[in-house]
Each structure stands twice: as C-alpha cells, then as structure tokens.
Amino acid sequence: MLAHRDVYNADHEMFRDAVRGFIKAEIAPHFDRWEKAGIVDRSYWQAGGAAGLLCPQVSEEYGGAGGDFKHNAIIIEEISYAGFGGPMTDFSVHSDVCAGYLYSVGTEEQKRHWLPRMARGETVCAIAMTEPGTGSDLQGVKTRAVRDGDVYRISGSKTFISNGQHCDLVIVVARTSDAPGAKGMSLILLETDRKGFQRGRKLDKLGYLSSDTSEMSFDEVEVPVSNLLGHEGGGFATLMTELPQERLAIALQSMGAAQRALDITCEYVRNRKVFGSAVAEFQNTRFKLADLKADILVGWAFVDQCLEKHVRGQLTALDASAAKLWCTEMHGRVVDQCLQLHGGYGFMREYEICRLYADARVQRIYGGTSEIMRELISRSL
Image (tube, rainbow, N blue to C red; front, side):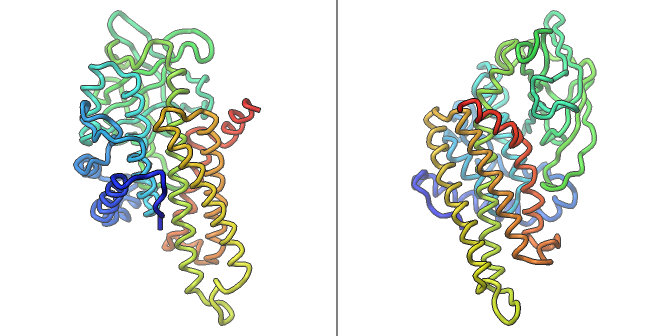
C-alpha cells in the first residue's frame, strides 16, 4: 500500500480517500472493457470533473478546486497504484500537462473560457508535439502556422497524441516563422471542430491499451490569431518551462506502478509453492525483493523532494530530468524482476503483472526518452 509521507498533510490525505472512492466506483468496474475497446468512455471525463479530479491545481477563479500540485500527485499515485495506467495517462495529459500551459501562459480570456470547461470534463485537451520523424527532437517540428491577417492557417501532421480521439481542444506546436531551430516555434490552441482538422487512426500499442493514442492532421485549418498561446516564437521556451512538471508527473506515475508491482509480487510469492515451499522462503527471492524495496524507497524520497520544490516554484529542469530518468528506469527493473518471480504465469495477460510490465515500457520514452534525460543531466556536469 502507499504509505503516508510527510510531503502530504491531513487535507491531502482526505483527498486521497476521495480519489480511492472514485477509482472503485468509476474506473474499476469499466477498466477491462476499456482495455478491450482501446479507449475510455467519454463519461469517464464527466465523472472525473464531477469528483473534482480534473485540473485540481487550477484556482477556483478559473473553475478548479484551488489546490496545489500535490493534489495532482495524489491522483497520479493512486490511479497508477490501482493498476489503471491507461486512464491515468488520459487524466495526466489533460490536467498535469495541458492545463499547465493554459494556466501559465494563457490570456485571461483563454483561461476563463477553457479552464472551467476542462475542470468539469466538458472539454478534453490534448497537446500535439510529436511528429513522424521528430520524436524527442522538438526543434525538428515541421507543422506550420502561417499568419494571414487575423488568422493562422495550420498545416501538418502529428502522431502519438494522447487523448487524440476524445479531445475537443489541441495545443499545437507549430512553426510560425522561418527562424532556425527553436526560434520559430509557437503554441496555438486549435478546436477540433474546425474545418481541415482530421483525427487519424487510433494506434495499437504495447501497453496502456485503454489510453487512446492517435494520429492527427491539419489541412489549412484556420484559427484566429487570438488562439496563440503565449507569444509568437515563444513556444519552445514555454515548453522548456512546463516540461519539468510533465516529467515529475511521469516519475510519480512510475512510482505508483512500481509500488503496485512489488506489493502484488510479495503477495504472490507468499502463496506460490515450489518444491514444497513458498517461493518467498527462498533466499534468492527475499534478496531480490529487498533490492526492489530499497530502490522504491529511494525513488519515493527523491520524488517527494521534487514535489516539495515544485509547489514552491523551485523545481529545476535538472531535478525533473533526474527524477524521470531514475524513476522510470527503476520502474522497468522492478516490473521485470516481479514478472520473473511470477514464473510462467507472469507472461499470461490474465495476471496483473503482465499488464504492468507492458505498461511500464513507454515510461522511458514519452516526455523525453531516457537518452534525452541523460543528455540534459550531462549539461550540468
């Protein structure tokens, strides 16, 4: 179980109880069906909004709960620990990533229009960064937004977009000038009911099956200049400012899932008999689990430190990169060893550890690959 940690106060723990109630009522009964369908129900978003689980860090002035990012962290930890990584990813992209951009650099009109709708679950938001051929290299973005009087005309394509099927609003990373590298990039809000926007196929993934991940394309989509998020040419700088929060969220997700894998494995080896003895009685088992426990304790200590820094506005890109690198790499080691301790049953999809293993793999890729995290960390040496 997720233990009480000093980073949270009594109010946070009350909120944790509410999140657990939501998981039991609104996720657990539907999860297997969502996994088979490859997408959550749209009603999941309305239920999340009604329960106060969407954009909890947004102030009441803009329709949020007026909490801090620790409330977001509790949602991430609890849904991940429950083993429901797909629905967690959908919420996280919406609340921890997209809402952060609007809240930080949106105009007053943009915030008042979109954030209340996002908090209620009426508007589902996605962010379109990755393109075929770009991956983690954001400076290689080719999608264009050409200004023509009072509108931008957006053309290009994106891939690996979480919430791609359900989204009503997309934050598009696009080039608004011919300036090289990062200088010509901007962020533009695009409503998905505009002519020229097209959702592509829902992608078939290794894990997080219930989180819809899609392609999308833009064919001369016209949006008003007032949809510019931040200032023109400032997109890359905004991305660099907001990415630490996204990477902290991914680290927290890995921690919750790794803790889940360890806990269910400890239960399994206590009950599984081999050569007349419980698997847990073998020294090899105990020592492997001890190593995993130590890794997880170290991970919790570091993400708690990062979480405290973040709510004070002091989380650095270095800390966030280190947290994502350590926690996601550790997560991968944990689920691998836990599956091994399940033996052949661990390879069966009917056993939860199999799904946790598949879901874990992308953690080292999205939000910036482990290799990119190492590159960023190395710059501080």
